Image (cartoon, rainbow, N blue to C red; front, top):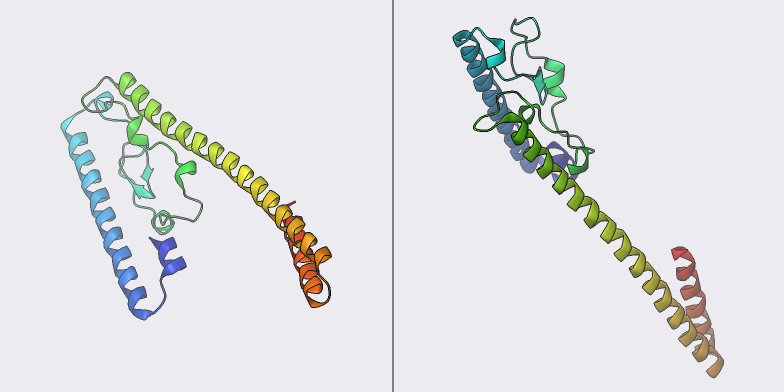
Length: 188
């Protein structure tokens, strides 16, 4: 949201509206993290066995999500909260599997098969992206080859017109030949 606002939003009214939206999303995120932390604390108070609890990591998107290694509650990190905003480089290709998918005690399934299925789905998505990008490279190279061939054909047409005419028409045709040659040189 922040990168979209920085790139596309101009003006006071739109800026205020986008700032309000970002604040609302941040508030909802903080409420969800608080609810998650409260649930984890309640779960911790109900059981004495650490093996019965999911393995929790310290931060999800810069928020404290549970007890640290000593079992004491950790405080939220304000610097991490400020840096939780999406950056320009955060795209699909830079994703890291969320800790919750690798946590012990995942609901309603054997954890090994659940993790295996989740990793397989992520791998299939990544492989499909790689295939699409590879196909796009092939298409772009073919498009570049055809564009160069088209420019060479136009150059030959203007050269034929240049030799067939004289005076101003020949000068214009000569200018067109030079323009097409310069354009073709930019492709190589």
